[in-house]
Picture 1 (tube, rainbow, N blue to C red):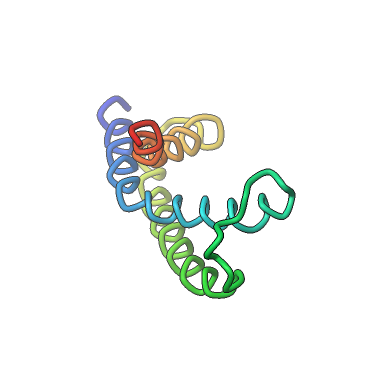
Picture 2 (picture 1 turned 90 degrees about the vertical axis):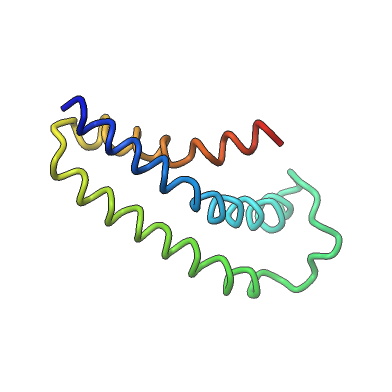
Length: 107
């Protein structure tokens, strides 16, 4: 399982590089609409078009990335012996989010 495990982590790290875009879009939507409505954040002053334009942009990007991630990991999962819900999926999700976390820390 050794080499096979690292290939899954490596593939998810590579998927995380373009995955920065959907993570940023989801963060932007959350900060400007639900969290701002709850009073946890302040809304961007120039963001007055409503949520529909961002959903038209963000929804396809996030859905395409999620589908690509799921199909890739489903194909990789078939060759792994790690427990799926306890180990494989959480590790792959964290590996995919590592580039986003690295950018958040660096900036």
